[in-house]
Every structure is written in structure tokens, then in C-alpha cells.
Length: 80
Length: 263
Image (cartoon, rainbow over all chains, first blue to last red; front, top):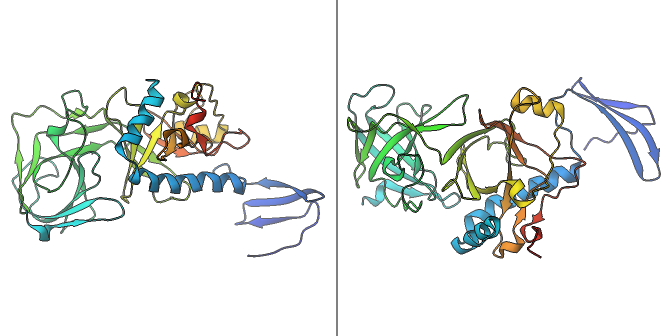
């Protein structure tokens, strides 16, 4: 992992078109400003990981699902 | 059955059969003869990929024409044992700019139990028709963590079926269960950025559809619904992406048991 030290209002450039700037530091919180093209997906790491973990788990679990489990899920969703 | 002709993938459940096709002249790209592999993609529904040994880059998606009724819904209970390649297979046409999937029942690959096969034209078959059970989805960035999964067939057993199955194509892999998130949480209110909307549907007021992935557990009340990372797509084209609803407060592991009236 590359480790850089930056002060407030200093930044880093990634791939020439993504600029991350340190806007503020308060205690253990750092406020970052990110300028990037619209098509670049920027996410909080914990949200990205939460979705990723569920995708991977879902792909494994469906293969192991039993027919009666799926039937009960259908019933719950259908309200019957 | 010729056991030599058959290999099952332990991870995905897909099965491969070696065929020797004696071709007949058919219109279009069908009807080639030679050695081929028929890969039955899933046991849930009869879909298969036909890969000719001489032209492996041009595969054809196939389905069992007898599986579908005239309205394009399964005419059976939906289970295809796919123990053998034997039977009839007709080409599926997935639109480049459309979510619709059509079958061409007039072109039939007839396979025998020992791998011998022949293309024939069924002159009594009707014109190509839409398989309403299927929608073709193309996620521009794949699934998060599974970026290679970009093309899918979305399968519903019937118009009333609340749980659908997302079947990855190219590369083939295990399927996923999905649900309409508004059926789980009627007050669900996903808010997308303008850039994401434009990327998916081209303009802000175009129709848009949502799917949430289910993480199945033995206890249905403990099934997780991913409301944080829905699949968002244009129902006309099937193009979309998995978005992450930052700042929404929705969970990637919303319990099905939390649905109104369940607890």
C-alpha cells in the first residue's frame, strides 16, 4: 500500500483525472473532497464491501437452497 | 447413455455433452455440422450453449422448444433433469438492444442419447415467439465482487412468481435468486444520481426497474434481501448496473422476516 502524508488543502492525483483533496481534519475524522469523472464509481468502503459480501454469499447459498425453503419464501412474498 | 460424452461441473451444476452433428442446410447461422459441445447451463430451466469445435467463438444459446407454452411460459413444472443431451433444442435469440428473448422453434437440433445429433427444419412449427419467462439483462459493470458476471437471463416461472432466478451467461456460473424490492418493502425509495440514471436509461424520466438479490437461508425469516445494492435496469433494453445507494440507510442484509406483518 502506498502511504502519503498530506496537509489540509493538499491532495493527490490518480490517473490524471481523479483528484482527492484533504478538506478538514478533526480528531479521528478526515473530510475528503473527490473530483472525478461522472462514470467513476466512488463508494464508502464499508458499503462496497457489504454489497460485495452479499453478492458472493447469495451465489453460494442459492445452489444449496432446498425446494421447500424457496416455496416458503414465495408464500411469504405472496402473502399466502 | 454414452457416459464418455458427459461431464458435470461441480461448482455450477452445468453439464457438458459431446455431440457429433450431421448438419442439414438451414437458413441463417444454424445447421453447421461437425463436433460440438452442448453445455446445459442450469438444471432449473432447459437452456444450453452449443459450441462448435471449428468456431468456438460463435456459440448459440438453445432451449427445449417443448418446455414452453404458446405464451412463452413454462408448460411443465419447470424442472429439467438434463440427465442427457438427448432431445430437441431450438435457438434462442437474445436481442442486442432489447430485453426480450425469442425462440426459433422451426430450427431444431435433435440429439440422440449417444451424442449423435442432426439439425432439421420443423416446417410445422410456428414463427419465432417471445419467451416471456426470460428477460435478457446486461449489467455494464457486472456484480460488485463478481465483475465478470455481466450478461444474464432473468427467469420467472410464471407471471405471478415473486422469486426470479438470475442466470449468469458468459461466463457461466451459479444462479442467484432475486425479488422485486418493492414487494419486500413497499415504501422502498431508491434515489439514484443523475449520472447513474443517464448511464442506465439515457434520460431522467425513462422507465426503470429494480431487482434485489436474495441471500437464501434455511429459515425463510432469516433470508437476506440486498436493498442497499439493487440491480437497476431499463426494462426496454435490459441494460443496467448494480448501484449502491449511498446515504440511503438501506441494508445489504435486510431480513425477510422484517417485512410488515411478519414480526
